[in-house]
Length: 147
Image (cartoon, rainbow, N blue to C red; front, side, top):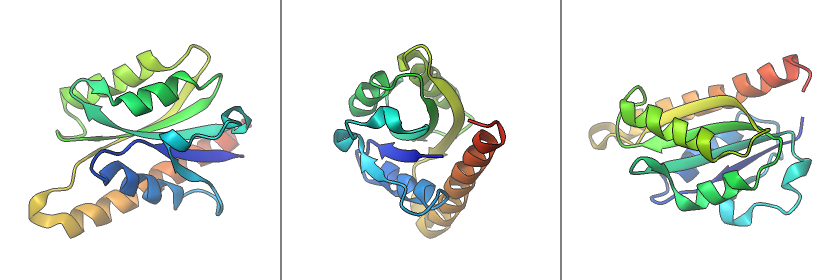
């Protein structure tokens, strides 16, 4: 299954999570900022797209990339300042779904808070493990479904 990881990052946190996500995918899977989205994006079976919350909206760069996807399996990961189970997290995921063109299918979601200042190392270790598991689990489910 041909996959790609795209991300939009304001502070570097979403880029870091994208690098953790790609570590759970087959070697050689591209990991690129949304500004470098390849022209052949429709040749990929699954797009892992990372974005950050800009208030209640998806950041502009990610929104523009999402709008260009056509009939894709899309796995979304979002960095937020609030907790992953907050109303804000639910709102941002809803916004992502609303931005996607019809025909796209959300095949996975992962919401991670920004790093805690009091324990960045532990926060990063957990994020690394969760992001990798998210990627592996999403790909396993897609392959099991015969996509």
